[in-house]
Image 1 (cartoon, rainbow, N blue to C red):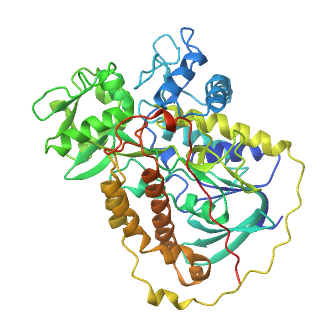
Image 2 (image 1 turned 180 degrees about the vertical axis):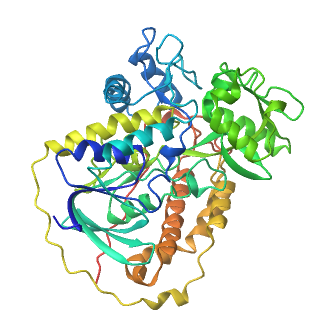
Image 3 (image 1 turned 90 degrees about the vertical axis):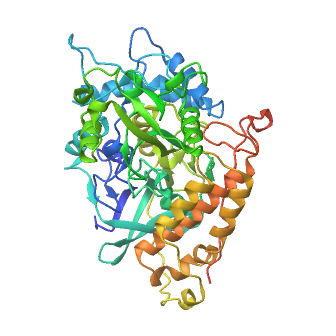
Length: 520
């Protein structure tokens, strides 16, 4: 088969992408595309573990309840049931295939505690290196069966007859290529790198979501961006994540005077849901104070958390002083490309899985360590769904419009730098939002609307990096629009001008779908 034709194209290189590719590659030809290096993704950075009710004292029903509670009842309950009920069995399948997790002295899998969980149910690998260990194991499993194309950015989804049938890419040499497949899967992660403070890899910036939107797929729940409470903060920069597992082992948050900031805020104090902890830190910072994670109660910190320990040493933070300076940062996007539980989107031939997808499993606020479990469960369901479909013939590629370099860029205002966009998103669409700030953000972003409205015509005149910035501006505009429309506070979405949760918004979703433009 030609390298430009395949059964399946997977866009993304994280856990959802590779697990889906692994399952499908036994029966289909699969190509994986990533715009960066195959190890540059959020899954590889993941310090936290995999949440799963595998203990005899735990049940999937209790995990289900914790997930719904953390998600502020905005979850799709059927998706949560699939996650929590199927999770233990599918996780065991990977363990049986050779994936190892940390064990205690008796040889049993160690189970950690994290925020908003009612039981110790978090599996880790290599302490705080869970994502790295899983991804290294997974690459060893797929290296001979899946073709991974690195440093090649998808810049367009090709559609015809209400379905997608291929992608257009730009590689690091600015060469443009076209690939065709019966099934296109987006497993690109969310949009955390839209913000100046983030735990995300820089590649996870929402551009893929905007691409899906431009192709006609429905996006939903874009107002729900989760902020992780504890990002290591050095010289006014975020330098990495301090896992929630640290608080699960006894660490607690204090202000510059040593006062515990979560006491009296929530019954679970430092292990409260992430949105609550992040806002408590935000308010301390807004008053000009500083916040530290006190680790004096964490036994064998350097052995238990080697990645965090190395990060502290690298940036001159003394572990011996037991105080790690922290701020909240954008972490996980509950919104994304709207799918059902099988990964089907509103556009035939296009699927989404993992953080890029929104099947409602996380509601308004993801429960800690449910993301890796999400990848394990829904990648398997997606692969099984595709394999059960009747084999479809590839659409005959149509002649691509060979637009010359479109000159309207000369009349447009210059594109802003990424850091300017990230700062605006952090300020106006961050942890605490207000109509005034969101409207200002929309006006600022709206000045660049001609770029994304004319992207089909401009594409040949732009570099991959410029296309990426334009798509980031568009997804930012959609996030601001959704946040402005939801006039309540629920989970990760907090409006200072509408600080209460409203029953009228219960289970209501804000969908976005582009009106398909007729190209002439």
